[in-house]
Each structure stands twice: as C-alpha cells, then as structure tokens.
Length: 341
Image (cartoon, rainbow, N blue to C red):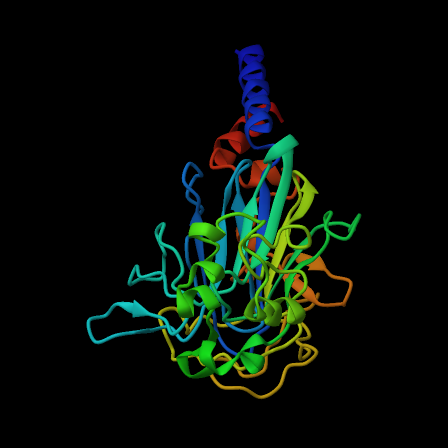
C-alpha cells in the first residue's frame, strides 16, 4: 500500500504541473482615494475566474489566481451603491449584473480596460491597457521581474488623469468618465468599422491622439498595436494597480462590501501623491512589514499584501509552488503529501 500511495501522489503532482504549471496570479491594488469595485470578464472559451467582482477599499490589495491559457479583461467600477430594489449599480464600469459579481458580463462604457491572454502564441503572455472603450480610472499593469524591452515584459498602462483633460464633448458622468469618440459619435472612422475596418484606412484621429499623448503605453483606437501590445514569457504574475501615480478622488457611495476595512497592523505610511478625498478611506494607505500580511516589496518601497483580508493564517503552505496553491486540488495534494511524510 505504501508504494501505491507514492505512485498516486507522484501522478497527481505530474498532472497538476502539466495542467497548471504556467498559471498566473493577478494582484489588484487600489491607490485611489476611494473604494473601487474591480470586475473580471473571461473571454469565450476561457474558464471563469473566482471571483468575477469584489470590493477593494483604498490602500488594499487582493490576489486572484488565473489558469494557464486564460484570456479576458479586468476593470474598476466606481461609485457603486444599491438602488431602491437592492440591485448594485455603479457610476462607471457597471457590468449590469446587479450584484458584486459580474458573472460574465462586460463593463459599460466608458471604462479603462486591462486585457490579458496568458500562454498564447508560443506560450507567451500578451497584455495591454485599452482606452478604446473610453476611460474612467488610471490603470497600470506590472509583470513580475525585470523588463526586457520597450514592449517586452514591461509596465503597460495609463497613469494620467484623462478625466481632467477630457474634451467637453466626450465628458460624461459629471466628469467621472471620458468616452471614446466611437462611443460618443458612432462614426465608422472613429469605430474602425465599415470602410474603415482595416489598419490602412482606420488611422489616428484628433480624439485618439488626445488619449495617446497622455497615455502612450495604452491602446487609443482599434489598430493602435505597435506601441500598445506587451509580451512576456508565460508563467509570470501581474500586478494591476488602480490610480498608480495620479490619485483622483473616487466618490464612494457606500456600496455593497464597502465596509470592508483595509488590512491593519505595522506601519501604514501614506502613499506618495495621496491627499484628502471623498469616500471610504480618504487617505490611501498600504500595509507594511510587521503587520502579519504576506506580500512583496516593490521597487518604490510600497508593500503589496497578497491577502485581501490580511489573514496570513488562511494562506496555503509556503512549501507548495504557486501553481499548486492556485489549484482546486490543493487540499487533496496536501493530504497525499502528508501520507508521504
């Protein structure tokens, strides 16, 4: 029986490594001065991530595992609250589900989108930040490890506050969002449709150039590929930061889950650029070493907690590789490993 147990354990390990060895973890970080409600939508054929929506108070982070081969988009909803019927509605980025989870539904425009294809062509990851559907918040994607080129495994995104420089004809939601020209006017030359549905005829417009000049590492229109698509070798983790540099005041109306408190313990210095704002937690703060949270130290000395609750006791054992910690079979694997020890 001892030999049989060893063989079963080895087979399970091999299967998990083959299936999920290149899995990634997305760490969402909120540096805005108010609460945001991230949404996640998987593309057709990709598995549903868990969760598909959650609350992220200012100064907190949350890790979400994704399997190899996953593709989809993530964004931030703002100004979320319950209406008279009890449904959750958001000022920007609303996915129309009426609840905290987006359950496969897309963001309403305007919304800044972070898009990913993990382990795509040649096993590489592809990612970008898109303003094609408009803009509501600054977003930065940072792959783990060092950058190797201008668009190869480098930081991508839009760190500018486009709402402050949005043309008046594109402004919406009282200045909380900036629509794309396609969304605002619906003309083929802005939407890259009809006779303009190819890169030769669909060219940058005055409106897309406003976006591009402010955010040169983001998609400003449908065929803005050369400087907007980023690539990493598969298997890396990614940090998605809302309001990474500019920290606009995000109005928080006390929506579902907004009572969740930021992790506590240790030193909690104010983030660079943070000021007094409105909404939940006007001064963003990030947990620092000593408070019991697990996380990683970034180059700017900020501390990213890897658990949204700050409860390190619920973390999987450190001896398991990331791919195994993200696996739903982790409890079974732990049992099998216990039998071997």
